[in-house]
Image 1 (cartoon, rainbow, N blue to C red):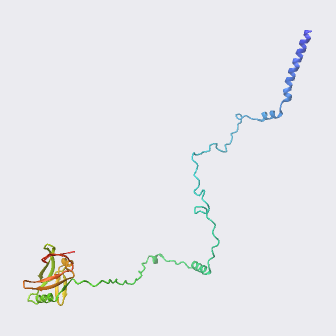
Image 2: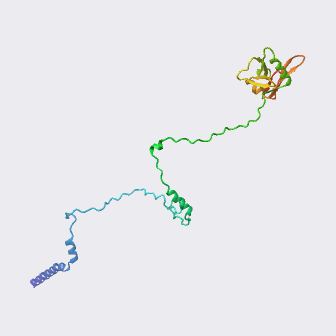
Image 3: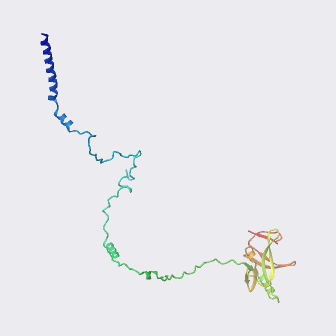
Length: 245
């Protein structure tokens, strides 16, 4: 009885193992088998793969600035050129004739030798000398009738003398008249002639006595020439010296 039980247990275990061994073969997926059968490992491939693009892409921390015209409206000067206004009237016939005439002008060619020749300068009209209208010159000095008669007597002497009028630093006011007899005038003397009588004036004293009047005065005490000078601003009490402004 025990032998039969052991044999039955052995047979049942054998059938179970056979069933477990056969069932995987019957349930195997054909797609999985095909995929694993056609796959070739990467390390077993003998062909070298072709690199079509680099994996490195350079980039900067600071992005590129936008273009200068970014954000500028089209109507601005910096924007795109606006369309030309077609409302401009066409040129008139006279303007077209002028333009056509200018285009038909023949070009004149000059040889190098002719170009290097000096051209005569255009004769300009001689300029007229400028005229200055000066006012009447103020008389340097005037002579009274008595002064003219006395000076004429001096010139009619056997040895004629000329009188030179000048000024010197003298007296309490600064200036005093100085008269001297000379034979001939110097180059810088101012000559004043009136009624045939000539008087010399020193150029250094010209500004001090210009416009004066010369007179001859006689009294019981002395005889002398006196001057009426409009340039005097201050005069000494005795009348010997004066000052001008």
